[in-house]
Length: 71
Image (cartoon, rainbow, N blue to C red; front, side, top):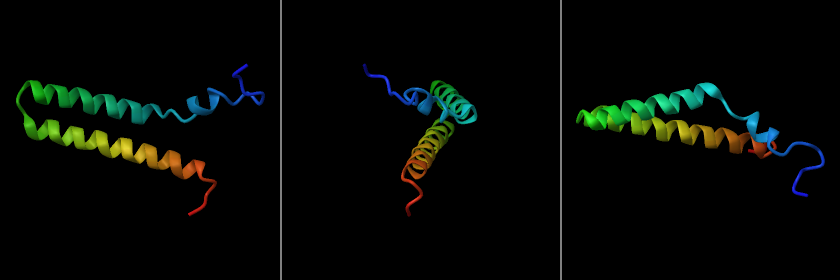
């Protein structure tokens, strides 16, 4: 019932997954956790800022590609 007749349901989103971005987010998260555990605040903050920047970039690129090229 909830399936799209054109067959673009979940495949539409799976095609947008970029492994290099996912790996970068995981790597930054691991380094941030290690930085917090070893009381390396500057490293942890830098990694968290990197995660935020990557997430913002991913969200922005998804919005830019879905607006039909306007703007």
